[in-house]
Length: 214
Image (cartoon, rainbow, N blue to C red; front, side):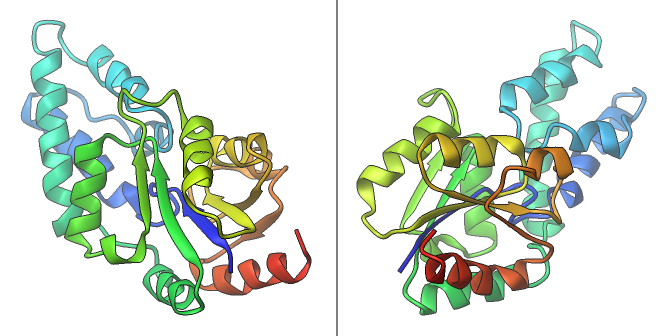
């Protein structure tokens, strides 16, 4: 039995289907230039305050807070209507759960975003523990450290698409699986203990890491 800790954006959720249109449609509604998708996607997996600071810099100072709030509201609306799990992810979660592994979520997303995502896609029943950064935690290293005190199943494995997922796993002495279908790159995934190209390959990868005694 393993303890598998998931990132959300770029790992479970195809975030580009949600955040990119939320930003572009809101900017257009305010008569502002629409940022390109790559610029928006570069913030996936980063702390939300970095993303908000970038958004504010694109706006007139007297409208910045209003536009950021409008973007966030539209993003929450789109999670359910246009958001999609990566193909094969729901089946992978079912397989891991049915094999007896303990699953958790650890995300830099704000709490309202995380809750809307889990509820809109009916995913709460998969996860024993849920953590989001908010203002309580310094980052994923701290969140994962806390999760490891709550769940005894081992090995513990972090699945994520960005360097902070891999670094946080190794900082806590546990394994990291790079979701290479997400928004990271080869440099960010270099130190991962395993790499998956699709969610469908996750259960067999977890089994392989367990069998190898990693």
